[in-house]
Length: 156
Image 1 (cartoon, rainbow, N blue to C red):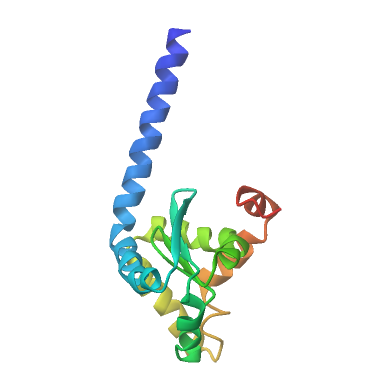
Image 2: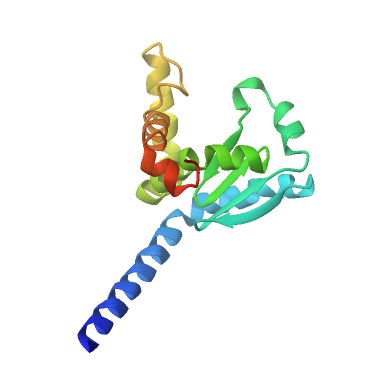
């Protein structure tokens, strides 16, 4: 019995250490997300933590996004462990997709910015759409469409 307790304690410590490493590895991108959240908060957006990720939405964020150039408009966007969405209903609807991006940041760290932009540039050079043919977006749509991804995000 004591052996199981030691093993469980060791697994828990490994899990905490792994989680801490993921947060450290993504911290530069998360810092960008926090910085970009300041205007959202000043417009009345509210934040909440869902599955270890800060989601920010609401207020007049929708109005601000609508004033951006069309190519820069978004419903939700992820930076490390920060997801900014126009409102909390959109955040709930897109949660499984955006959490795939969180895992991509956890895999690639700050390199994700360059890799994402490179994938969009490659799509453009091939005559394709920079968003719909971006490798990382395609992965997020594919993974989020799987039933277990929707169930984990409360989307089933």
